[in-house]
Image (cartoon, rainbow over all chains, first blue to last red; front, side):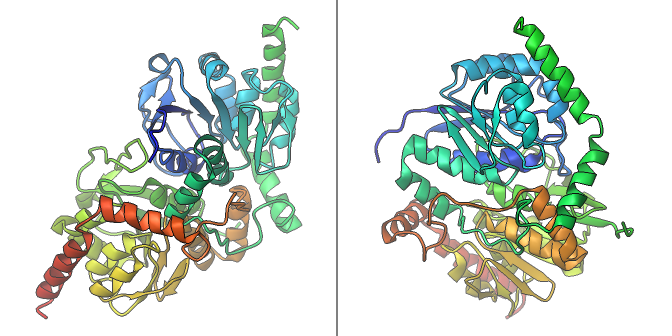
Length: 235
Length: 235
């Protein structure tokens, strides 16, 4: 097998991240060959996730000043992470130099707030996608979106499709097919309910109501973040 | 919303587990409503996974003597876990009393070695499925297999399909459809390569060669485990 160039992958980790946004792509990308993965946060304290058990950072912002691939997962914690200057600064700094700047789910909002998706097409969780425009990105209703070296995935499980597509771009299609087989990724969802187009209107309405209840002030917080972003740029 | 009965879910954790075998279903099942999740191992020391960063147990075997749902993930570490008496004893003990006894990927081999799949139909990773028969289970080439309260999933990513199907059995189809939408689970694999039937013969051969290189003595070790299992039963 040909020697593969080493790749360092940095996942941002923050409180109330959606665990699978990170663990899905981490599983796939760990099979890039000659790749190392760090889960990076402000400190090494355990980070709460939305799925009942914490994830533990393997490195701090200070320890990871650069990476070949930056990946920002999403979750209900994304808004607070976008309000944190240290987080935005680290994402901006690593993302400016990274070979690939990527996200899953609402992670694209954080990339956009860090100024990394200006004028770029980007995916996001279907229920939150529209807010990308506030931060200068162009929301796209696709599962995986490439725009130059920006590669963004849709909601949660889209991270697996995103990571296989990124793998093909980096290591070639043959390798991605091999990894897909290793992960037995031949999905068979038990229901047709994975997108707002396929789900029933009642299910879509229930989900939107849950988000409104759980994050009632999100639109206002996004507006403040966008104003701060504009002010920082001297606009 | 109707009050939901509390559910305690125990995932077995062991060295060299395939991370997504566990994190996929954990993400789904954390949305069962009124559910708590433990990652259970012999000790609380961090456990190495195959995807570049460790997982941290939230409880020890001694602390979790029972659970409503037992889930055993797979990975290259499964064989060593099957050779460990304390692991088999805990799985057998919790599995005997659990409402649902489940696995993903090669985790079904561990369930079978613990005597929990005698005469039961079970799924497994496609490349390892055949070995289930050694331990008294009936290998089935399906992505999700229900046999009474035994529910087993195929390789790695099948854990997401498995967990949604289990969720529908426990909380009803409407709830599972809601969770599927929340996770935007409308998969779009970039290639047709997720099963030995869909992948090219060359890709299948490459995968089998990798397994043979990485686990050269696996068949012999399974045979020893099966003999010990038979001896323990006084057969």
